[in-house]
Amino acid sequence: MKKGARADLLCDSISVLIKPASGGCDMRCGYCFYRDGEHHARGVMPESVARALIENVFTHARRGVSFAFQGGEPMLAGQGFYERFVSMAEAANTKRLPVFYAIQTNGVSIDAAAARFFARQRFLVGLSLDGTSELHDRHRRMVTGEGSFERVMRAATLLRTAGAEFNILTVVTKDLCRQAEKVYAYYKRQGFSFQQFILCLEALDGPRHGMAPSNAEYARFLIDLFSAWYADWKKGVYISIRYFD
Image (cartoon, one colour):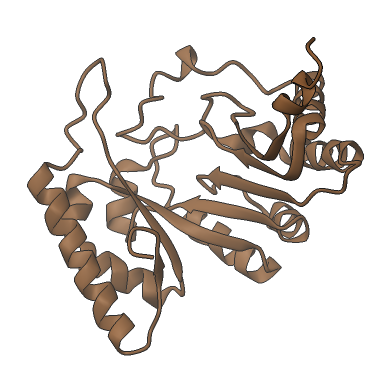
């Protein structure tokens, strides 16, 4: 190794996206590109891999570290996985760098203990919710076929009670495009002050699901959503929508 080469490998901050349960999921959302789950589910990340990842990150980071967990459904790894992960990170963080944790989840496996853990360890939780019960349950169903809306709302209540920080992540389908103002008003009534919206897309290959909006439909959604948000902003009511922040 050349003199000074090690310094070139150091980074001020390192952000890592981890899929601890690969593409495995306990839901079968109609628009999900992981619907053929057997081709994407490779089990839970072994502790030895997590430890090696953590040690490598802290070896090279100089100012901060961010671990974000997604899936599939990352809660399939189990709460114990995250407890061990945080413990290993604390042991490896000999430079005492600031560490940020985030997890994106469908929420159906969150119980009171998990909510308390996320609050205690200051995880930012992204909770997937597609609007009202009718809109959500149209596409976001359990493996057994029933809707998941009530479970997600229970997770929101548990997270709020525990004091965990969370935001709402909504997939914008053709159906939801037509109800931007209704969904915004519903979220506001529920006290969901931090909202994100992501565009539903067709798979790059394989059959089309037909749920992705057209350009014109998506434009109409953004205009309607902004109009409702801006009207509140002018009245001094602030809702955080990532698009507009």
